[in-house]
Image (cartoon, rainbow, N blue to C red; front, side, top):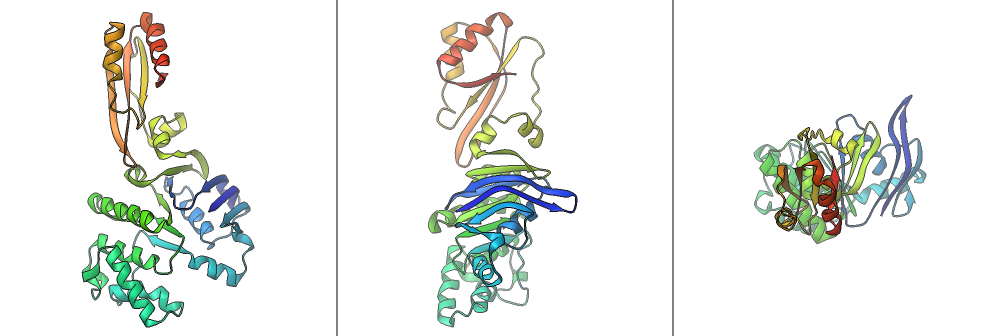
Length: 318
């Protein structure tokens, strides 16, 4: 669907994107998680053909974006919907007129427009707001209008640039739920850019973490958060506080065994006492994952680690 290989983007001597290589499959919910100023807008604009890249390759449906001519580029952009942080609605137009605008510009008939707009407003839950103006809507309702407008031309890809960052937590959750429903119903590829951690955890199937234009993490979302490496921990601002005496072992619980009673079983079978330093469970993309740190005496290290290895558990000594 979207294939990016060795992509670089410079602004003079400043390298904004550095050797980016990723593949995004059709129907996938893919997320770029970035700190402010990390090149998020640049990457998004490269994908929709609004900005050139310095070198490397960026293909959508096997078409190299930088090789498209003006007419081809216009047709290409028709296939990509876009939603923004501040909605970008036209204040003097009604909800219906805002959603209908792209189809009007492409010359669709009134009957085609009417059917499509009504279907989309039903999809986003705004059937009764057809004649309302943006000033009469809440932030969440405005974003639903923007989502409906982005879908009018039946795009294969929906780009979301910080689309929930201006919304409160409850509204953010409802918008993410809507995007997930749209992804499932329409099999549309959704690419989100955000700096909000909860957005990553709630919706993304895969995530790319960028810092200063460099990839520091790229994997299934659950894997990224289940066992983050040192760079990932620094990026997320995680600090692990553990005892300075004894041996600290961190045990990871992926989605398939997050609720298994491994710790109590190990203590019972080894007839051993140990301290539980801390632990957590969290929901990542609808699945429960977690980890726990235990502290044991140095003399028990070998027997405990051998037991863990025998049970095919993901772990590490801190």
